[in-house]
Image (cartoon, rainbow, N blue to C red; front, side):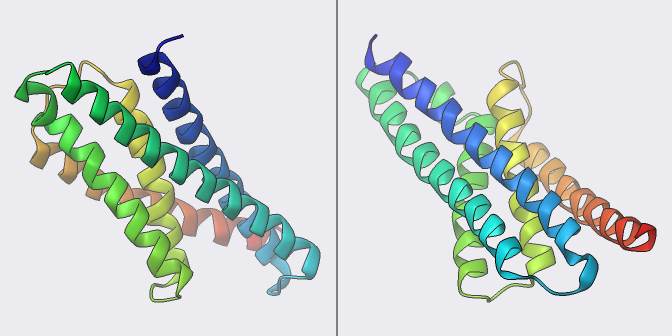
Length: 166
């Protein structure tokens, strides 16, 4: 197995951990909000989800840096590094890191931060899968902004619907 394959597999693993951890953190947070308090058991489950998300972010970041180094060594052209899709993925990764720091130090509302984080993980996954996307950076980021708003309102709807049903 060469370095390119190894780093790509790590990149996919990091994305899977991030998307999965983010999804389960949202599901559990909505479920645990029913009684308006988080007990120790529920807190431990959410801590595990957050740890999985952090591990995914670390793996994604470092495997991505490794891929960048390999691509530069292969002297790939500027069409790779200046494509809208690539720049959007880098921006979304920076948003993920920044929002994680803001949430860690409680500088951002938890509902807003979790919506941005969840939308960012899914957007990064979609952009990684959608290889044939030839859109501008502005178009992708505009779509991402709409997607964040959509995820925020979907999570709010899920919270309200679940709280009413119980």
